[in-house]
Length: 226
Image (cartoon, rainbow, N blue to C red; front, side):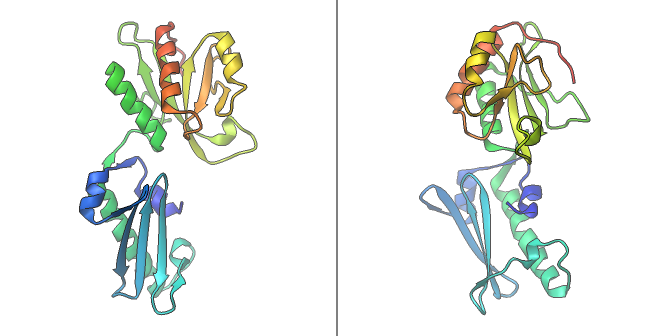
Protein backbone atom coordinates (compact mmCIF):
# COMPACT_ATOMS: atom_id res chain seq x y z
CA UNK A 1 0.00 0.00 0.00
CA UNK A 2 1.54 3.33 -1.03
CA UNK A 3 1.98 6.26 1.34
CA UNK A 4 -0.80 8.28 -0.32
CA UNK A 5 -3.30 5.50 0.33
CA UNK A 6 -2.10 5.15 3.93
CA UNK A 7 -2.59 8.85 4.60
CA UNK A 8 -5.86 9.38 2.71
CA UNK A 9 -7.71 6.28 3.94
CA UNK A 10 -6.35 6.21 7.47
CA UNK A 11 -9.18 5.67 9.99
CA UNK A 12 -11.75 5.24 7.22
CA UNK A 13 -14.11 2.40 6.39
CA UNK A 14 -15.70 1.80 2.99
CA UNK A 15 -19.46 1.70 2.55
CA UNK A 16 -20.38 -0.81 -0.17
CA UNK A 17 -23.54 1.04 -1.15
CA UNK A 18 -21.64 4.31 -1.51
CA UNK A 19 -18.95 2.56 -3.56
CA UNK A 20 -21.59 1.35 -6.02
CA UNK A 21 -23.22 4.77 -6.17
CA UNK A 22 -19.83 6.36 -6.88
CA UNK A 23 -19.26 4.07 -9.87
CA UNK A 24 -17.34 1.10 -8.50
CA UNK A 25 -18.22 -2.25 -10.08
CA UNK A 26 -18.36 -5.37 -7.91
CA UNK A 27 -16.24 -8.10 -9.45
CA UNK A 28 -16.19 -11.18 -7.25
CA UNK A 29 -15.17 -9.97 -3.80
CA UNK A 30 -13.59 -6.77 -5.14
CA UNK A 31 -14.88 -3.31 -5.99
CA UNK A 32 -13.17 -1.81 -9.05
CA UNK A 33 -13.25 1.75 -10.38
CA UNK A 34 -11.41 3.25 -13.37
CA UNK A 35 -11.04 6.87 -14.43
CA UNK A 36 -8.92 8.65 -17.03
CA UNK A 37 -6.81 11.51 -15.71
CA UNK A 38 -4.53 14.21 -17.11
CA UNK A 39 -6.69 14.88 -20.18
CA UNK A 40 -7.05 11.18 -20.92
CA UNK A 41 -3.34 10.43 -21.04
CA UNK A 42 -3.50 8.02 -18.09
CA UNK A 43 -6.05 5.59 -16.68
CA UNK A 44 -6.23 5.10 -12.93
CA UNK A 45 -7.81 1.91 -11.60
CA UNK A 46 -8.65 1.58 -7.90
CA UNK A 47 -9.38 -1.88 -6.52
CA UNK A 48 -10.83 -2.37 -3.04
CA UNK A 49 -11.05 -5.69 -1.23
CA UNK A 50 -9.25 -6.28 2.07
CA UNK A 51 -6.62 -3.84 0.86
CA UNK A 52 -6.71 -0.84 -1.47
CA UNK A 53 -4.68 -1.13 -4.65
CA UNK A 54 -4.14 1.35 -7.47
CA UNK A 55 -2.84 0.89 -11.00
CA UNK A 56 -1.93 3.84 -13.21
CA UNK A 57 -1.45 3.10 -16.93
CA UNK A 58 0.17 5.43 -19.48
CA UNK A 59 -2.30 4.99 -22.34
CA UNK A 60 0.20 6.13 -24.97
CA UNK A 61 2.43 3.12 -24.26
CA UNK A 62 0.13 0.91 -22.16
CA UNK A 63 2.90 0.78 -19.54
CA UNK A 64 2.48 0.88 -15.77
CA UNK A 65 3.42 4.32 -14.37
CA UNK A 66 4.74 4.55 -10.81
CA UNK A 67 6.89 7.69 -10.69
CA UNK A 68 4.14 9.64 -8.92
CA UNK A 69 4.48 7.34 -5.89
CA UNK A 70 8.05 8.43 -5.17
CA UNK A 71 8.21 11.57 -3.06
CA UNK A 72 11.67 12.51 -4.37
CA UNK A 73 10.46 12.44 -7.99
CA UNK A 74 10.12 16.06 -9.08
CA UNK A 75 9.11 18.02 -12.16
CA UNK A 76 5.98 19.69 -13.49
CA UNK A 77 4.66 16.61 -15.30
CA UNK A 78 4.99 14.14 -12.42
CA UNK A 79 3.63 16.82 -10.10
CA UNK A 80 0.47 17.13 -12.21
CA UNK A 81 -0.01 13.37 -12.26
CA UNK A 82 0.52 13.15 -8.50
CA UNK A 83 -2.00 15.95 -7.87
CA UNK A 84 -4.72 14.33 -10.01
CA UNK A 85 -3.98 10.92 -8.47
CA UNK A 86 -4.44 12.34 -4.97
CA UNK A 87 -7.57 14.26 -6.02
CA UNK A 88 -9.27 11.06 -7.19
CA UNK A 89 -8.36 9.18 -4.00
CA UNK A 90 -9.49 12.06 -1.80
CA UNK A 91 -12.82 12.19 -3.63
CA UNK A 92 -13.32 8.44 -3.14
CA UNK A 93 -12.50 8.80 0.57
CA UNK A 94 -14.94 11.70 0.90
CA UNK A 95 -17.82 10.08 -0.98
CA UNK A 96 -17.43 6.40 -0.11
CA UNK A 97 -16.05 6.23 3.44
CA UNK A 98 -17.05 6.85 7.01
CA UNK A 99 -14.65 7.85 9.77
CA UNK A 100 -13.56 5.04 12.09
CA UNK A 101 -11.81 5.07 15.47
CA UNK A 102 -9.16 2.58 14.35
CA UNK A 103 -7.04 1.99 11.25
CA UNK A 104 -7.40 -1.68 10.39
CA UNK A 105 -10.60 -3.47 9.29
CA UNK A 106 -10.71 -6.12 12.01
CA UNK A 107 -10.12 -3.53 14.73
CA UNK A 108 -13.14 -1.57 13.51
CA UNK A 109 -15.28 -4.70 13.20
CA UNK A 110 -14.43 -5.68 16.78
CA UNK A 111 -15.23 -2.14 17.90
CA UNK A 112 -18.63 -2.36 16.18
CA UNK A 113 -19.35 -5.79 17.68
CA UNK A 114 -18.51 -4.55 21.19
CA UNK A 115 -20.82 -1.58 20.69
CA UNK A 116 -23.65 -3.81 19.43
CA UNK A 117 -23.27 -6.41 22.19
CA UNK A 118 -22.43 -4.26 25.22
CA UNK A 119 -23.13 -0.68 24.18
CA UNK A 120 -19.56 0.29 25.03
CA UNK A 121 -17.43 2.75 23.07
CA UNK A 122 -13.62 3.07 23.21
CA UNK A 123 -12.12 5.76 25.38
CA UNK A 124 -8.96 7.42 24.08
CA UNK A 125 -7.26 8.41 27.30
CA UNK A 126 -3.76 9.42 26.24
CA UNK A 127 -2.78 12.30 24.00
CA UNK A 128 0.59 10.63 23.50
CA UNK A 129 -1.08 7.45 22.23
CA UNK A 130 -4.05 8.57 20.10
CA UNK A 131 -4.62 5.09 18.66
CA UNK A 132 -5.10 3.37 22.02
CA UNK A 133 -8.78 2.79 22.83
CA UNK A 134 -9.92 1.37 26.19
CA UNK A 135 -13.19 -0.49 26.77
CA UNK A 136 -14.54 -0.39 30.33
CA UNK A 137 -17.09 -2.33 32.29
CA UNK A 138 -19.95 0.12 32.94
CA UNK A 139 -20.50 -1.07 36.51
CA UNK A 140 -16.91 -1.29 37.75
CA UNK A 141 -15.34 1.25 35.34
CA UNK A 142 -12.46 -1.19 34.99
CA UNK A 143 -10.92 -2.24 31.70
CA UNK A 144 -11.86 -5.48 29.97
CA UNK A 145 -10.24 -4.78 26.57
CA UNK A 146 -7.91 -2.29 24.92
CA UNK A 147 -7.04 -1.86 21.25
CA UNK A 148 -3.51 -0.57 20.71
CA UNK A 149 -1.71 0.75 17.65
CA UNK A 150 1.93 -0.32 17.84
CA UNK A 151 4.91 -1.30 15.72
CA UNK A 152 4.82 -5.06 15.25
CA UNK A 153 8.41 -5.32 16.50
CA UNK A 154 6.99 -4.69 19.99
CA UNK A 155 5.48 -8.18 19.96
CA UNK A 156 7.58 -9.90 17.28
CA UNK A 157 11.22 -8.83 16.99
CA UNK A 158 11.43 -10.35 13.49
CA UNK A 159 8.71 -8.07 12.11
CA UNK A 160 8.01 -4.36 11.81
CA UNK A 161 5.31 -1.98 10.61
CA UNK A 162 2.15 -0.54 12.11
CA UNK A 163 -0.35 -3.04 13.48
CA UNK A 164 -3.30 -2.95 15.87
CA UNK A 165 -3.64 -5.47 18.67
CA UNK A 166 -6.20 -6.28 21.32
CA UNK A 167 -5.38 -6.94 24.97
CA UNK A 168 -7.87 -9.01 26.99
CA UNK A 169 -7.75 -10.45 30.51
CA UNK A 170 -8.06 -14.25 30.84
CA UNK A 171 -7.33 -17.10 33.21
CA UNK A 172 -3.65 -18.03 33.40
CA UNK A 173 -4.18 -21.57 32.09
CA UNK A 174 -6.08 -20.33 29.04
CA UNK A 175 -3.37 -17.77 28.31
CA UNK A 176 -0.75 -20.55 28.37
CA UNK A 177 -2.73 -22.59 25.83
CA UNK A 178 -3.54 -19.66 23.55
CA UNK A 179 0.11 -18.62 23.33
CA UNK A 180 0.74 -21.87 21.44
CA UNK A 181 -1.51 -20.56 18.65
CA UNK A 182 -0.50 -18.20 15.84
CA UNK A 183 -1.89 -14.70 16.34
CA UNK A 184 -1.55 -14.66 20.15
CA UNK A 185 1.35 -13.00 21.97
CA UNK A 186 2.46 -12.29 25.54
CA UNK A 187 0.60 -9.18 26.66
CA UNK A 188 2.08 -5.95 25.40
CA UNK A 189 2.47 -3.33 28.16
CA UNK A 190 0.22 -5.29 30.54
CA UNK A 191 0.64 -7.99 33.19
CA UNK A 192 1.60 -11.05 31.14
CA UNK A 193 0.23 -13.46 33.76
CA UNK A 194 -3.31 -12.14 33.41
CA UNK A 195 -3.49 -10.52 29.98
CA UNK A 196 -2.83 -11.64 26.41
CA UNK A 197 -2.32 -9.76 23.14
CA UNK A 198 -4.21 -10.68 19.96
CA UNK A 199 -3.03 -9.46 16.56
CA UNK A 200 -5.96 -7.85 14.73
CA UNK A 201 -5.06 -8.92 11.18
CA UNK A 202 -7.77 -11.59 10.69
CA UNK A 203 -5.47 -14.40 11.82
CA UNK A 204 -7.98 -15.00 14.62
CA UNK A 205 -11.67 -14.86 13.68
CA UNK A 206 -14.03 -12.19 15.00
CA UNK A 207 -16.12 -14.91 16.63
CA UNK A 208 -13.22 -16.29 18.66
CA UNK A 209 -12.11 -12.80 19.67
CA UNK A 210 -15.59 -11.86 20.84
CA UNK A 211 -15.76 -15.02 22.97
CA UNK A 212 -12.49 -14.02 24.63
CA UNK A 213 -13.74 -10.48 25.16
CA UNK A 214 -16.82 -11.88 26.89
CA UNK A 215 -14.60 -13.88 29.23
CA UNK A 216 -12.45 -10.82 29.88
CA UNK A 217 -15.52 -8.75 30.65
CA UNK A 218 -16.61 -11.36 33.17
CA UNK A 219 -13.27 -11.19 35.00
CA UNK A 220 -12.53 -8.26 37.31
CA UNK A 221 -10.87 -5.50 35.28
CA UNK A 222 -7.78 -3.52 36.07
CA UNK A 223 -6.76 0.05 36.52
CA UNK A 224 -3.40 -0.41 34.81
CA UNK A 225 -2.25 2.78 33.08
CA UNK A 226 0.24 3.67 30.39
